[in-house]
Amino acid sequence: QVQLVGSGGGLVQAGGSLRLSCAASGRISGIYRMGWHRQAPGKQREFVAGITTGGSTNYADSVRDRFTISRDSAKNTVYLQMNSLKPEDTAVYYCNAEVIGSNRYWGQGTQVTVSS
View 1: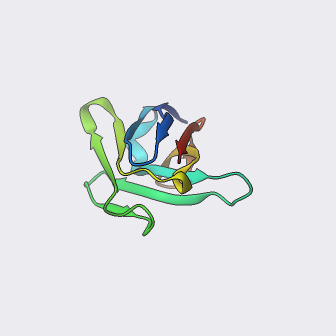
View 2: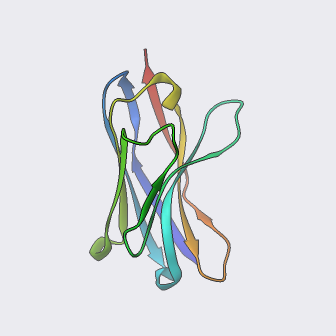
């Protein structure tokens, strides 16, 4: 089992910044990618950003050039720096981890609200 604990988020004005963190624990040796998805009210959960254990990153087109995902291997933690936030970024953000030979694990979700 892998446990994910997310933190960060909150309320910010448009154009502002927030940083999310996600710490992994448990059987982390099988993790090959971590990242975030988000879900806005009435919408499906969507991919935001991911980073592999090798450091390769990928982003949704809607956040590219505004969001940056990074990792601290020593702390088993990934970060999502979100800049130039827009009202349409408002959603619950879910940290997740992809594990070899297993299902994707999800964190508890953290609310990000961007006011116009």
